[in-house]
Length: 384
Image (tube, rainbow, N blue to C red; front, top):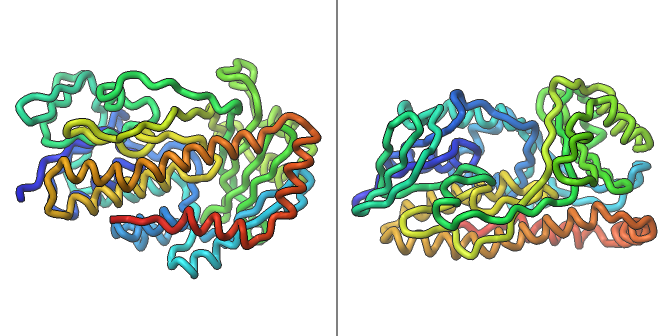
């Protein structure tokens, strides 16, 4: 069976992993990125056991190993630093042969870009239109260039142009909270003590994720209205005041951070789609199933998508059957994770003080083996 030519729109994690996997099979791929020069934006990423399994399937785990940091444990604390619950991700990694890691997004993107074959990536391509004609898909760029292929993959994020072409506009759901992120140098001894933690306080949270080379990725999530002009202009001084009553780990990480590296975004998702394809066009990553980051699974789901599609492309199947199989593997799983992530965000940002106290008591009384069992279910992804 002749392999199709593939156009991928969007060179984020999903697009890069898919392009690399397909080119390894000898498939002709053109990866289109709107940025004039692809650089890794964002701060840190969590690569849970499921993401690592998918990366291993793609042949990328060993390549990324020098720039990741192991995550042996994930813990939730209250704002005073008291443990509410934890998951032994090191033991889960041994059980499932799939460890958990953290990575700087910029370093991951640069590494993946560096192993793409010459001529695959086209940067500075703004999509003007998509046309389906005579069994081909034509992607038209604003600069007048046309790109033709047999299959189009939309990996262009939550505001996907490809999804808009397929299904029209989707209604974005604001999570009710806004987020600041940064990466800061932090001593190795402190890193080993911290592990990965998320601290839940009154209507706000703070996450600390160790990275390689004595750094931490941190995120601060505060309840508030969407597109709030006041919060949009917050500086590190504002964040330090907001979290002044949190435990010392949070205070010290913020004290070491600088305004120049501060990133800020409101957090959104959209109602899950019932299918990720139509005709010979497929959606992957945030274009298909954007989710609030409360489970640290945005990158993981994108990598799972890539590994699933690359595996299906290695099978001797008609394209229509490959697309149906992709929905079979991905739609239900991603819908559940979108829903669970949304519910966790609601739980973390409960405004009622009595309900916050009740939530914390329930967390502390939950046996660790239940947390481990739930995480094992998430990490034990089934790939074709």
